[in-house]
Amino acid sequence: AQSVSLVIVPGHRSPGSPVAMLFGVGKFMTTVSLLLGAQELHLDRVNTSVGVHQAQAYQQKNMDLSFIVNLREEIRDFMTIFVGRMSNNMIMGTLFLGIAASFICEGTIDETAPDFLHHSFYHCIVISFFFF
Image (tube, rainbow, N blue to C red; front, side, top):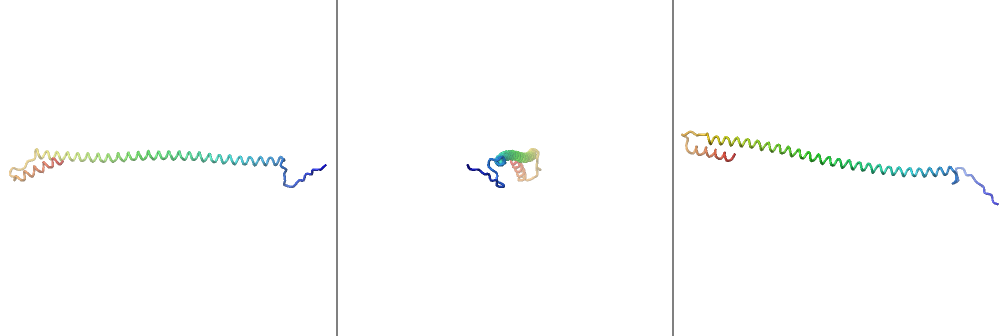
């Protein structure tokens, strides 16, 4: 018959003691908490990443639309200037044509003027009529 003696060492706990079990459960729960925290951090980053990508896509579409609007506005301004200049040129051409036509129909030179002056006058009027 052997006797078993239990030696108690200060700071040592036997593996089956309730305190040791609580420490083991605490370590396990801490590990699980860290893993869940890491997973939550990862999901937050993924969700943030998705939000950032969506914001970038929205900003890109907005920039494309604003580029098209600005381009359309520039073309409209260019066409307004171009049509205004064409209108001015048409008005001036019509005025010159009217003046040339009135000189041909109503313009007279004195009868005593030399013949080359008559020919030069009508020659210039006809050229200006066809030119304008």
